[in-house]
Length: 154
Image (cartoon, rainbow, N blue to C red; front, side):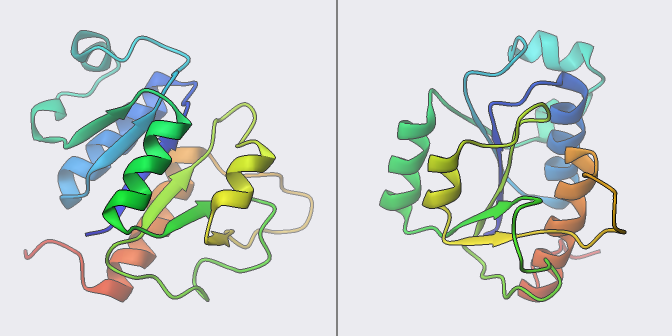
């Protein structure tokens, strides 16, 4: 099953949006700590996530813990980044992929880039820097679910 992962998220509203997306589509969301905000259930509810009881939220204490899980579970790490040369619609996704989204303020460090088996980007007009992380995550997740037949039955 495809999964989303958030690398040290900065903005609770974006994390809440992505958790709601995961809840609605049946996709687990992994949060790699430390986050830039309180990750308690109470704090997430405050950011507007009334879907929290339906979300499959997995917390990882740090990058090392997350990569240990990736390796142990035999998953492929797919990084969403503006530094990639491959458009997300040209990539070939697999059912076990984990789609990693970087921090809103800084993306991910070079070591995280190096750990990704695949890096994808969303094509944009020249001069535009990036999309909101929740919007980008939804676009890439939608394409990955389309390719793998992973959307829930209606």
